[in-house]
Structures are given as C-alpha cells and as structure tokens.
Image (cartoon, rainbow over all chains, first blue to last red; front, side, top):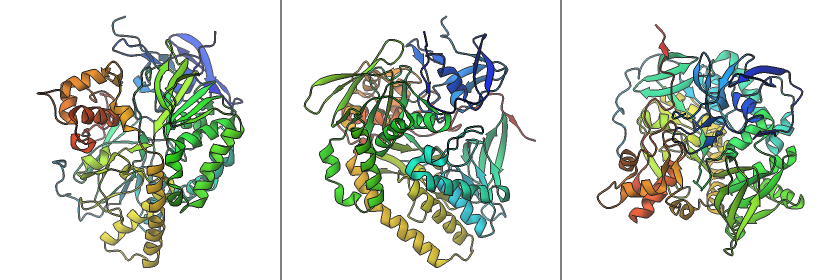
Amino acid sequence: MNQAIFTRLAETGRPRIAFTLDSRPVEALAGDTLLTAILTQAASVRESEFGDGPRAGLCLMGACQECWVMLDGHGPVRACTTPLEAGMAVRLRRRHAD
Amino acid sequence: MPTDALCTANPHAAADLPPVIVGAGPAGVRAAEALLAAGLAPILIDEGAAAGGRIYQRQPPGFTRDAATLHGTEAGKATALHTAFDAIAARIDWRPGTLVWAVRPGELHLHRDGRAETLPFRDLILATGAMDRLIPLPGWTLPGVFSLGGAQIALKTQAVAIGRQVAFVGTGPLLWLLAHQYRKAGGGIAAVIDTTPSATKRRQILGLLTQPGMLARGLSYMLGLRRAGVRIVEGAMPEAILGEGRVQGLRWRDARGRVQESVCDAVAMGWHLRPEAQLAELAGVPFRFNPRQRNWEPDKDPTGRTAVPGVYLAGDGAGIEGADAAEIAGARAALSLLQDRGRAVDAGLLAALDRRAGAMLAFRHALDAAFPFPHALAAGIADDVMVCRCEAITAGELRAAVDPGGAMEINRAKAFSRLGMGRCQGRVCAPAAAEIIAARLGAPVEAVGRLRAQAPVKPLPAAARSTP
C-alpha cells in the first residue's frame, strides 16, 4: 500500500538518488528536500515526544520545527530545509518511551 | 508592553561598516539594490539558499517549470525580482544559508553550516517576512495537515501536492490563490472552505477597487475554481480534521449551522499571515497591536525607521502588507538609511515611493476587512484540543493557567502551562493562545500581550563552533 502523503505533480524526470530510511534502501529525486523525499513514500517523519501520534511537518519554511529527523553523522535536522543528498541515512524519530 | 532591555546604544554607531540586511525576499532585495545604487554595498543575509523570499522562492537547480507555470499572473514580478538580485549578487556580500539567531546592540549572531559568527553592524534593515497564522482544530497534528504557505512551497519549489484530494480551509487571498494554483497544476481539490461569508467580502468592494488589477485576479481565481466544479463554501467554520494516523476528512459547519464532511487526504489551512518579528524585538524595537489584522507588529514609521537608531524595518515582518508593498518598503527603508548616514537622496524617488506606498493602503485595509480573522473560532477551541504542538499543551491546560489566581497575560500563562516553550517558540500557537486567554479573562486580546521572543530565535546545534 502506498503510504505517501505528498504526490508528485511535475518535474519527475530528475535523476534518482539513493538514501536510506530507517536502514531501508529507498530512492527519491535530485532537488528534493528531505521532507519531500520522505513524504513521497512514508506517512510521517516522526512521532510526537508526548505520545500523541505521528507528525509530518506543517509550515515547510523552517519556522514550526515539526519535521525534525535524525540524520546519521549530523544529528537532528529540519527535513523541510535540508536538501537530499545521495547516501544520506535518515532515521525517523521514535517515541522516547519505545 | 515593556520593550527589551537590550535597547541600548550601538557601540558601532559611527563605525565605517557596511549596512546589513536580514531577509532576501522582495523587501530585502529592493533594499540591497537601492543601497548598492548609492555606492554602499550591503551584507545581505538569508536563511534560505536563494533570494526571492517565500513568495518568489526559486525552485532548486534541475527543475524546469518556467516562471509563468510557477508564478502565474505574478510571473513578471517574480522574474523582475530574481533579475534584480542576480544583477547585484556579485557586488554585495551575499550570505545565503545563514541564520541570524540573536541581535545585541551593534552585533548580530550568525550561524551557518555548524559555524557561529558575530557580525558587528552600524545599520540594520530587518526584512524578515511572515508565516501563516493558524487556528488549532481537533486533528490538526495529523500527517497531511499543512499551512497554506507550506502547501504553496510544496507545489512551487518541490512540484508536489500535499495530498491527492486537498481541502483548503481558512480565509484570505492566499486561500484562493493556492487553490487556484493547485487546480492549474493538476492537483485534486476536495473543497475550498472560506470562513468569511461572501457578503463580508462584497462590503469591501469600493476599497478593493482601488487596486482593480489585484481585485480582478482574485475574482478570476474564484471564478475559475467554480467553473471547474470545485466545491466552494463561504461563511463556514471548520470543526475537526478527521482520521486515524493521517488525514481522512474535514468536518465543518456551514453558514446555516449544518454539520458536513468532506472526504480528503490532506488539509491546507491558514488565516492570513503573522510577522516573523523576533529579531526586531531582540533589537529593541517596540511593538504595537494592529487591530485591523489582529496581529502584533514591530513599530516603524512610513519611512521604515524605528525607535532604535540604525534599525529599519521593511516588508511583512513589520506588518502584513503583501509582496508589492514590501518591494516599495525595502527601497524606502534603504533611502532612509542613506539619509541618516548623511547621503544625498533623490527627492523625486522618495516622493514616488511614498506615493506608491500610500496608494496601496486603502486596498490593504479593505483586504483586512474583507477576510477577517475568525477570532471566536480560536477563542472557542474545545478544552481537549492541542494548542501548542511542540509541548502538547491543550486549550484546557491553557485555560487552567489563567483561571482565578493564575496568569493575567500570555507570558505568565506560558510559564504556568509550558505553552509556547517548545522548539517553535510559540510561532504556531501564539495567536490562538492569545484569543483563548483573552476570552477566558474577558479582556481584549491586546490586553493579554504577546509572547516575547528569545535568542536563539530558532534551535541551534549545540555543537555550533565559533570562528576565531
């Protein structure tokens, strides 16, 4: 089942880029932000630290701080303002209680 | 309101330092252009990778859509601004990807790629823009809910829609523009739900007619959506975003009080914009309440000057006036700066800018009245709805913080409840929180104050290194 939130409407001829999502090899397109790369194939980017469910960003302009993901070697980054690069290892944050 | 204690004299007030502009949107680019034209090359800083601001944000390299596809009727303006920036970029100190995270007298604190830097300044133009103003709803943290501005950025800079069937809800020009843009781009639209009744808009027709081109464009978006068979509802109020784990619908109440549901897998929501004015506050600029927009804004005069010598404001960061007004205000603030440095300024140019700015005011006031912020919707949020998304604080917890013996204004309520203490510093929840508190206290919303900004204005990596 396709879990994606985002739907591509155009610009789909860009080169494909490989990265990993929670260690799973996946692909997205050159020029994608991390948020686009994730939400075109996943249903969220993180879990709320307070146990109230998944989150997938909100403002896309670096203001709301809702779309933090863990990037191996970098720590937490805002997915909406971070360009996707080949080989990135992205971890969608899980509840601390898990 | 108390102003910031940091409003003290700038130690570099007489230093030979280049002017610094923060924000490379319509206001910042036009300010940089005007300064450079006078022989004063500024430092231009933006958190983004490219100039243009959110409204004329450029798509990344490798994307091929042309300006007309991206910006529609505004393509000429977008291209003109990008061209103006490209013409000066090599001759100014352009610093993209750079966050200004604090302002002290005569000093900006910057962060770029994990490196911290202190930048002394004599004169500062803040053109920091705006973000969407939101109203919490049940279910608004579900994946698939985005701000109108966010949904527009997704389309413009990433060529993605936020869902397959999107419900647009809110009020203001952006609601209709965005729905129009999604339709043109081939995106699915479940409904456009404007909280403002049609009659409220029609009452402002005379004021709106002062900018007939703008009015005609707005009407054409509405007409185009109707002709395409899009479901359009005016004067309706959203009740809840529905879904388990992700958006599956939107429940709303129509003008006659009937509860209805739209099936959708995404919601774009927003009620105008609010200024991103944290840096102005840290620079010591006093704030004023704008009753027409129901927003707090840093106080400037029509020339862009503030109560703090050497600090100028332009664009939506100093009150929402739109991109066209921002271009004018940016150039105007630059000319004020030049005058204050003792430079000769073309009086004809000054007068022309002031005339153009003045000519837009009637339209702006009509627009504010035509699409009012539905503050009762915000004030009436049910107790169990999460208001502060960062700290997961509900409306009920906020109300408890202001009940008898509790807080009388929003900063104290923040201390008691943790609302606004999270990573976004209240950017998202503050407008609704103020309405909730004001209604609970039976006070006008301006009487409960506004959340004060603090440095760092955005989260920084703890490992940020300072340059020697």
